[in-house]
Length: 341
Image 1 (cartoon, one colour):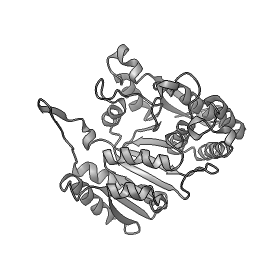
Image 2 (cartoon, rainbow, N blue to C red):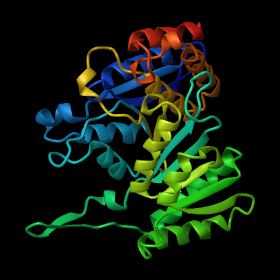
Image 3 (cartoon, rainbow, N blue to C red):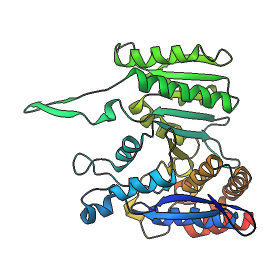
Image 4 (spheres, rainbow, N blue to C red):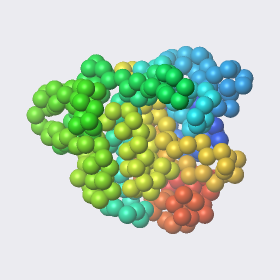
């Protein structure tokens, strides 16, 4: 890391603009970071559905090499074909780079009316195995087998991360989500590992909940949860459900964390139907950049941007289509920047 003539730190990071609306919303985040006075040196690389024909893969080796060098990346949404085609670029990044923890904070934004108040939780999802290991094969015509991989090492690692996060953020409870009443070996191992880790954090309450009951509790009383610890599939599904509690995927940030590499990204899709129209909500990518800044130690700039986003969305005139308004990507970006000046 170098510094500017004024002594400000210059952070090197990888930039993946993504597919569909990705270039529009990542550009919005870059403009906001610049307005906040954060000095970034970007290594821009191509990844996603739109580069498969050029490279034969959605994640060229140069992308992985760049992230390994910079150790930090900001990523726009990447499209994945349903039921065929290439393997998910997101899964490839997580497994190739050892990004074992998907971290998705979900909380109410001030001034944004949603069905529930008092939502402030973090989902910590195991990111490298489970049913997303991609180990599938056809046993016989009309019969397909998919293997769910759960290991002690990965389960202990993600549980440790969840309890450390709770400790770091001053949260008093971690709730492990499982289906060990049916999947007694796989989910049983995940739950047993969480129990073992919990013993090392006596100041933090450890609660257990079956995944279907958790889904019901989230849509009736979400304020009861602080940190949810989940394996891969459950975390994928419930993180989207939780986003719906506070306004949708357009306002929720995300991060994929490894031992020494972190990739920050919005959790929504590439929305090809509105790509190029500058209608997309850039909030999720901007708030993902806020998470990146905190990871880099730029807490003041992170807080300033976060407050500017909150103030912007508190005004209905700045609501995009997914929040029931008519503001476009550029209008929202300008409104956030004005509040930073």
